[in-house]
Length: 153
Image 1 (cartoon, one colour):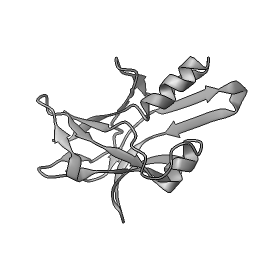
Image 2 (cartoon, one colour):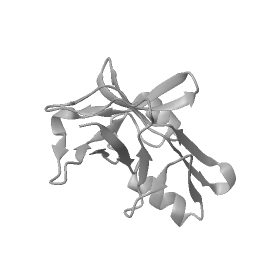
Image 3 (cartoon, one colour):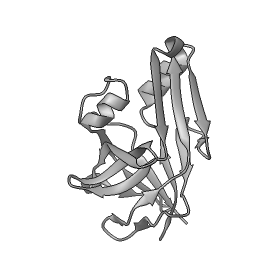
């Protein structure tokens, strides 16, 4: 089945920190907040990610932008147009850094992938080196992030 949304909370501790410090978490361009405080990104028209038995196949392109701002701009993280893409190190969670450049911010652990009764596929995610830098140097490579949730439709 084709994936229609990507759910991802980035990292609960980051969301809690930003909000506790008086900062702001913004959602734009189609992204929304979920009931648990995470984020939901709708599939872009060019997305062809399929939930096949064993592992997702294709490339997932999702719409939306989220931002974390705190401490008068000292903490400033913006994540644009997340994607799920195959990479040299397996399946990766990517973001658009520019219109033509995508960066892998997390490696997805397909060996630990689970499927919930409603068909949502949950895949653990861990930071890459680029992900560490994009998330403000707070989460070394391999740090577990919130899992990715792929909803079929």
